[in-house]
Image (tube, rainbow, N blue to C red):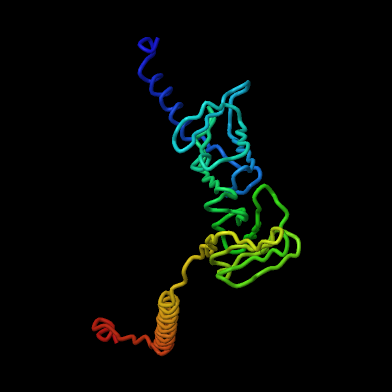
Length: 260
C-alpha cells in the first residue's frame, strides 16, 4: 500500500506522525497519601493521569526501569515493604512517560534497627514563598504525644498531640536538617534527620556597571544634542543677520557712461 502512495503523500504522513509525537504531553504520577517516605506496613496508591484514547486503554508502569504487569491507571501498594522502594514511572498510549517519583520505604520497628517515627514532607525541595508541610509519622499509626519538630538541632514547634507542622511561606532561613521527636507510651523516640532545601526564585540579575554605563551614555547624548542645538541656533542667527545687512550695489556699465 505504501508503494502506491506518491512521495509527497509519504512526506506528509511522516510529518504528521512527527508533529503528533512532539505534541505528546508527559503523564503525571501522583501519590495518595502524598508522602514519598513510608514505613513498612503503610499503604499507598500511585495514580497515573495522561491522555488516552477512548475505551479501555492500558496504563504502563515501571519500577526501577522494569515494566510491571499492572495496567490500570491506579497502582495500589498494600502493606509496603522495603522492596517496594525505588523509582516509579507511568505512561499511556497518548502520553510520554511521567517524570520519576522516588518512593522510600523504611524498615519498621524491628529488633536491630527500630524505626518508630518517620519525618514526612509534601516536598523536600521547595521554592521561596511556597508552603512547607511536615508530618511526624509513627509505625502502624501508633498514637504519639508531646511531638516536637527540630531544625538543625533546635526545637521549632511543639504539639501535645501529634499534628502537622505548617510553614506558610518558605524562605532561605528554612533550609536545613529536620527531624521530629515524640512519646510513644513511656518511650521517647526520634526520627532520622532529613534535609529540606528552599530554592531562591529566579530573578534576572541587575548589573551596576550596566546602569552606570547607561546613565553616562544618556548624559553624553544629552550634551551632544545640546551642543548641536546651540551651534545650529548660532549659525541661524548669524545667517539672518548677514541677510539683513547685505546691500545690493549697482554700477553703470561702460556703454551707459558713454551715453551720458
